[in-house]
Image (cartoon, rainbow, N blue to C red; front, side, top):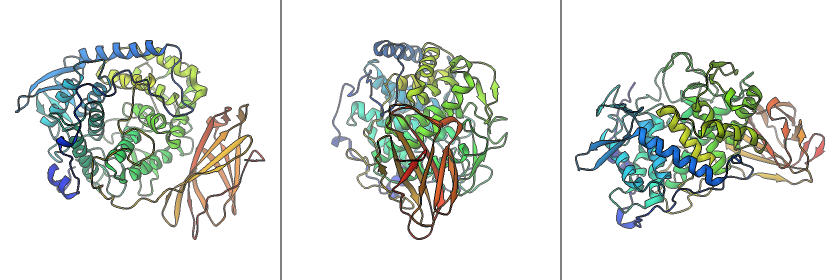
Length: 554
């Protein structure tokens, strides 16, 4: 279903008050500023594979990229200006290209600059191809499927392709600057504006499936997202690059949605379905079979298989506690289910952990390697995943996701906007930030509680005068692991917990207890666990200042 009206991309940018920096203001760079390999240091308490040296891992990525490039990156003629175009083929020799693949390609090629001397030429050609086939609904975005040089199966967009294309443009600006033929900052700004205007729910602030979705339509609308479209690390980069705080709201609402599914009774796996069906209060359920693509639309299948990688990146790059807790729930279940053996990971699961496909594919394995990096206790599992995927070749979709996961696992995936947090760290693309539809609340700063053996950080996120969300992180500062935990505190007012995830709660008056779930009972020495909850209140909503962990002050 299409929107009732559309705006040309340039008119939209003018109406939103976005100022495009002219190319003359950008510094030209003829060589990549961040050549491969980068060997990035990720967030504290994260790990990397240890069964190969860094030099060996870098060479694994080079070899995989050379193979990927030879099989899937193909010349696609010239555009009307005589510029050479390139596309990512939907399989070796395939005449089909989808925007998803074009986005993968732009991110991969930008990250591999320095190894590939033709990276800038290839990147520009990939961008030219995406512009050759704009969506007929919002021409800031790319039409989702091209075959034999023609748009097929509907002239409209797919969310994930455009988000990766925009991220790729930010990477390109970080590599080469924007004073060349392509002003990467201008084009990134243009695509991000289209994503926000046409594919982010105006009330839900959730990703929509594409610009064809009517926000208030049925059955597809602004409350029916695809779980693999939750890309918080990308959204955080967009917020830093543009100075637009609306992306904070997009992240918060995405996290609420993920937590809603993971908190469902019996959903101990933490797995997310391909597609979700949510209400306006972010109470979400798996989509029904046949919702969009097939009988597994409500299962963890060939869309959701990307979730551990997409969400895990936010923990690695931005030290986000929510993202860490979300992927750790999945990984903890998976280690138990597979006895810590990567070869036992199956091709898709129902949300209770029942396997769907009884075969191995890197698509369902490599993303879990990124997730495993968030938990130091999963070193052996991470090593086994890496060993099983670094030299495995399959087809376009599997290989593209595998290569992107390998870039992360080897420390060669980075954020072009740099730094943590949502505040821009350099001159933003938008000289005048675009105001959000509604001003998101300013989070209450964490309240650290020092102690000899533990620390509790209690952070209030969203607060809308009658309700709120909170995130609680427990850190074990002791020298031995903690097996099983119950955290208690007292509210200062009449706050009432309505839903808790990653822990079970009980409340009597102002007294609250939160007890570990089965999968996060152990807190290793120096490690931490997080849980969160929704609550209601009237009057004031002060953060607690005193906590008791297993009967002792913390």
